[in-house]
Amino acid sequence: MAHISTFVYCEGIQVEETNQGNKTHIINPQQIFTPAFIPSLYSFSISFGVIGVKYKENQVMVYKFINKNTNEVLIDSGDININSKKTDLPEELNGFMMNIDFKNIVFKNEGYYESEIYLNNEIITEISISTTNTVPIPRSVFIPAFFRISPIAFRMLCSNSSGFSSF
Image 1 (cartoon, rainbow, N blue to C red):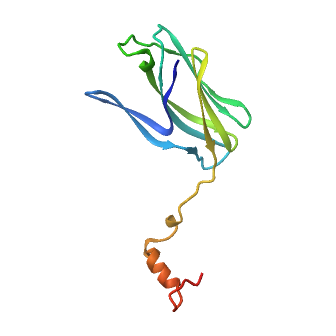
Image 2 (cartoon, rainbow, N blue to C red):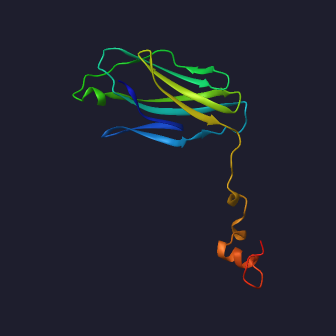
């Protein structure tokens, strides 16, 4: 039975042609989407692999991206024809890789969104991602370099004459 072998949300995908064939470069993988504002238009890419694909002349794949808060379908690829090639690989290893870019998708609210991938009208995966416009920024970003001190020096500055911390 067909199933997902790899899946990643990312900022972008570049395919480089080399003497050894095409090489795919994943740019900035994402665990969470963090647009600057919500509601917002947001662009992202996905890369995924499917294995366990039975050899068949014409296969149909569908990708959907759904706002789980409202069950609104934001992306519906429609039917994508996959022409599988006859290989010497065992059926459980036969498959394909796909990269898709999405530009200016409307995110109306924070919350969970889900990718659904169908092959020949059977769902083969559902993968969620959270979206928020609250981006945690490390404190060190705001502290100028000349104000940074080591943890040991900090403890020494904050300790009283007995050597014990005052807080």
